[in-house]
Each structure stands twice: as C-alpha cells, then as structure tokens.
Length: 341
View 1 (cartoon, helix red, strand yellow):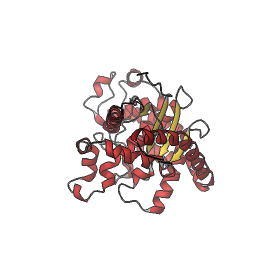
View 2: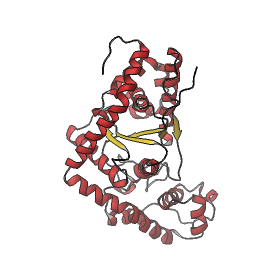
View 3: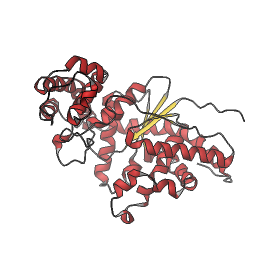
View 4: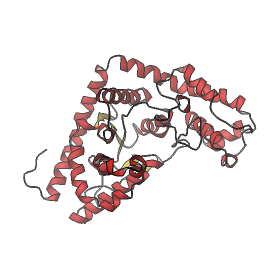
C-alpha cells in the first residue's frame, strides 16, 4: 500500500468558558502564535461545543467565545495566516464525531482521567457529552487531517485516544486515511501554576482572583498579583535542580523563562542568589511589558464585536473548505450511500 503523505497541519482549540489566564497564554496561545507562518498550516478553534458538556449561561457563552477570539488576535494570531473559527459553525465536527463514537470503545472512554476529575463522585449525573467528548476532540483534529497538535500535559491522554481512533479506523477499513497525529509538548511553562499555591494549576475557577493573572488585567493588577505571589524565604538557587522542592519558586521562574523566551537554566544563571524582593519586580516589569498590550487590544476588540464576528464567519468558511471533503471521503469509506454534507 502506498504511504499517504498528509499536509503538515496544526489544529488546536480552547474552551470559551470564560476568563483567559496567563496559563492559557503561556501554555497554548503563545505557542499557537509561534507556529503560525511556519511549515504548518495553522487552524485554531473556539471549542464551544466542548464548553456545553457542562451547563453554560447562553449570554456568557457568547461573550466568552468572542472574548477568546479577541484574546487569540491580541496575542498575535493573524486571521489571514491562521484559520480562526468557533466549533459550532462547522457541522463536520459533530458529524465526524458520530463516526468516531462508533469506532471508539467504552473501555477507552472509561480510562479518561479528565472525565473522572470533572464528573466527580456523582458520575451518573454527568452529561453524556462530558463522557463522550474525547471522541469529539478526535473529530476536531482529524476533520482537518491535522498532523500536529500543541497540547498541555493534561490533554496528552486525549490526543493518545485520537491516535487510537485513527489507527482503529484505518485498520477497520483497510485504509491509510487519517494521520497519526503527533503531540507538540514543549516550553518552560506549559503548565502554569497558581500564584497562591504552586502545587495547583492556575485556574479561572479558583475563588481567589489573586491566584491567577487574567489576560484582561491591566498593568497595575498584573504587577500587584506578582508582588503578592506566594514564595518562600530562601534566595533563588543558581541551578534549576535547586527548584525541585520549591513549587512557588519554580512556578515564578518558569513564568519568567517563558515570557523572556529563555531556558530555566539561563534564567538561574542570571538570577541565582537573588532574594524574591529583587526578582519579583523584574518579573512584574516583564509580565506587564508582555501582557498589558494584550489586555488593551482585547478591550478594543470587545468594544465592537462586529470585527470578531466577521473573522469567525470567514474562518468557519475556510475551515469547512478543508473539512467537508474529508468528511465526505470518510462517509464513502464507511459505506454510506448517497451521503451528502
């Protein structure tokens, strides 16, 4: 069988469930921008269908979808270079997801740790969508024959499921149709932790606003949160190994390294021996320099969302131009007679 060569293509998405943070920026959006204009076609999505696996207020969901798009653009994504759209505008995602629901096995889904975490002790009351959404995530990716996906460690298991689904589909039907997508996991701060507890991920759901930097924070708020971030009394070590048992120190150094585009080792050589009273102002200045322009541009875009809506409409049209023939070929492989999209 002749090996199929797929167009190098990146797909990734973020849920518009409200409140973009520094973790979203460093763990995802900054890397999205870095991959733009490279050897890959880049497709980035506001995954609003994933958001509704738990109940969302409709008005807040609309606002969060537009705000996420504003965040993408303000962070440096160019709608002319990358495809930006919201998931629900492209029905090929849900159509392909049903095919994958029939390919994936119950045992695979039951192993997904994020379902267990989100459903909690009362899993019987969780939505079917929350249980099945890894199949939709696979469809998000494979509807574009994406070859690479930038993901954080917490999503790596879902990408492994995507690979399993692609392999099983190809084997079941004797084809080499879907690519075996590769994860892209790199960077000093792919997992940004809380400013109040270095053992917990920075989260928009944390009740303390001081635990996170929001991309809507102005310069004063950014600087204040870093100045008040939890640390320990010891000076910074000269080597990264010295951070292993110091989660708050490690988190702030990782953030500095990611924002300054240096390795942690390079940062430690520069700041080793300093007290946090010296290091925190350096980090605050750097964070304000990098993040305040993003919050300013987001605010401008959100004043009149007409521009955002047009970008999303145009992006959906471009996304469908890629996904429609892939879905049609999938239907043909599966054996559906006269199926049209």
